[in-house]
Image (tube, rainbow, N blue to C red; front, side, top):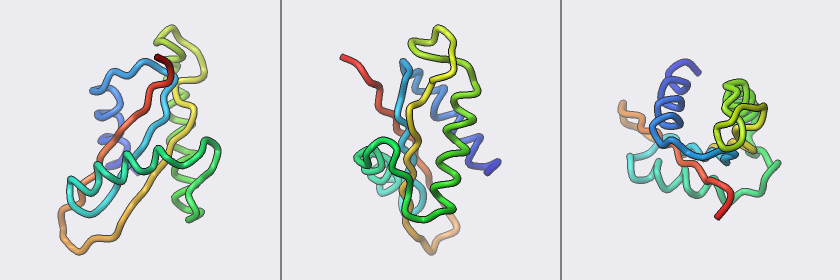
Length: 108
C-alpha cells in the first residue's frame, strides 16, 4: 500500500482536478494497458466495488484516505473530495509494474 500510496498521491496532486472526483486506477501489464485499465475502471457504476474482495477493500481504504485530505468540493474544504475509487488490474510477468491514475471530474 505504501508504494501505491506515493504513486497515487503524485498522480492525484499532479492532475489538479476540481473535486468531487471519481478516481480510476489501473495496475499491471504495460504502461499503455495500465492507462486503459484506469479509464475502463471509471465505467463501473458508483458504489459498485471490485469483484475481488481484497481489491474492493483497497478501493474503500483509498477513498477514505483521499476524503481525509479535506480538499472538498471545488477545493474549498470539506469531507467529499472523491465520490468513489475504482481499481482494475491485470496480471503480468515482468519485474516492471506500471500503474496509472485517472480521474473523472463531475460537472460541465
